[in-house]
Length: 406
Image 1: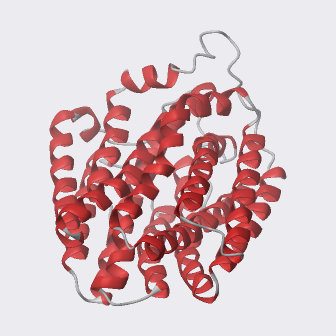
Image 2: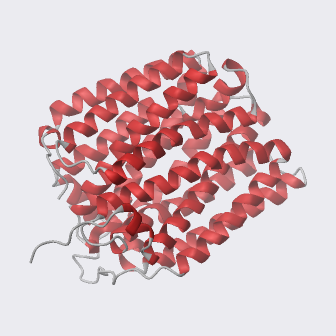
Image 3: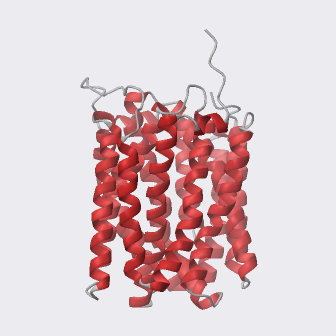
């Protein structure tokens, strides 16, 4: 029998399970982006330290590194939507703690780091489980388009989340945390009404091996090259941790300006997801991913050298658009090549690499900024990203030659 033709983006939004999935994922992303603005600004306000900003990323990354295999096993062994709900409940409770302690003036650097660590634990389970849930919801043959639409919905939250977070924090810091509580609770409710297709539960001893994801990735050069490219490119090129420094000290703006800067990559990402939702990448997908990473690096260098708000926002938007191309290709490639009973464990390893690039990247940016200054650190990171993309093209020729996502 021939495969079913992929449904359109509009038809996807009429698919009940997929719609509730989008709402849940978007609300979680919304809260995470508000948290990034509120926690980042509050830490920098309390300490005035670039190193402390970098430590936020390290503290949030540690649970992922410690729990990667357990989280992947949970996603394959238990009902995925229930795992996601438990994570959203834990995140809401943590946000409530931050709201109350901030309101009463009892919050300090240690409390924020502890709360960040707890959010990291919940995220370590939620993200790979959510990724493994999407193939059970997307209509057959439409995973790439569903990934693009899902990414676009999350990017809408990423655009408005930082702006709302900055605005709410300017009114009162505890107000920003209160919004996070509401959105995570609503996300948990929407997750509960999702009705995915039956999940392939890992039951046999071989299937239940928590390290199976590592072996699967190691045996597939294209997948190994894909996720390791993201690790090293974004690890070097990420400037997220430096945005409070740029907002206050270089671009001379405040919390609302920081929210705009954090939202700018998501604006570019949203535009690109709209393009990808209508026009899937059907040829030379491996080369397109490498090209996108190189553009990411160039945009990072432009942002690093900019002293104008408009140019900084534009370069961050281009950076976000390029990253979206890489994300859609990487996610689709990994999910299509992985059996359902292993998607949680493979997704957990992939999430470890993503978190290492994002959150260890924040630590690396904060450390290098403390040593050399924010601008030199960002320039070096962008150049490093370009160098990694060129090197990976040589190290993983099979990835470069991937023609289609099948």
